[in-house]
Length: 325
Image 1 (cartoon, rainbow, N blue to C red):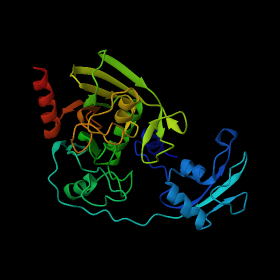
Image 2 (image 1 turned 60 degrees about the horizontal axis):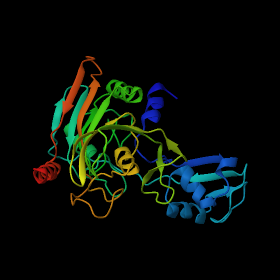
Image 3 (image 1 turned 90 degrees about the vertical axis):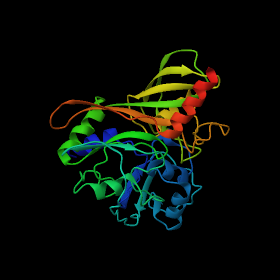
Image 4 (image 1 turned 90 degrees about the horizontal axis):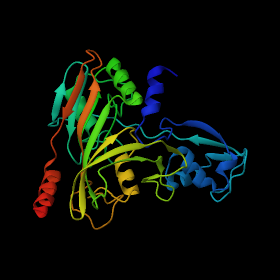
């Protein structure tokens, strides 16, 4: 495994670990993994839905010690589980003309202020109108380390999170930025409105994040199949029912700020996935990546970029401040 691939594995933010190209994979069941159903085990190991696991079993793509078993089979220690993973349908990613908010661009990098509602890269259900589609139209060439679906993408932010991200325009830049993320020298700071005021000014959430065992569409603080996650936060202003906070990522796990804030009892306002049903109607979480710092891959200049709040976020914040007056 080369250096770039190693770095990519270390800083991977995307939640899918599924073998997308297809192929055979073998697992040996350990003592701590027992006893659970075979279908649930497949969900955890391949990071797939229960429906897809059922399809694999129905298609006789799974054997346990060389035998076809039912989904309800309780796995045993030292069971050898072989899975013939089918390849996903090929997906052509096409350039699309878009009005991108480009904060900075040179021969090596491009810094984008992503609007709320835009998906970063193509995925099932979002094959077009993603940031990658727009970048392919804007740039003649992009770093290909992440393949056709994510050319040049070094890190990502959620669909309904607005704000800054940097894209590499060549392999050297991609390697440098990826290493900075792995070494935690690339700094990403967010602003958020969360439920409930705080009794303290600063804090750190150090809690591992992995797939929610009860809902595979969500992430959760969990000790199982998780990775270390650290979020530092500062309370900028308390309101009657909410608080305005700054969050700095030390790690970059999927939905990290949303999961961590919910974990400590302060879910992000507008976040219907991790927060209460009764929340601020904002068409998604009030979370904004407002500052990005990194060392330029070629000049080694320390670069700092800021992006003002998106309109809905600013509107809600102004209303909360007026209510306090």
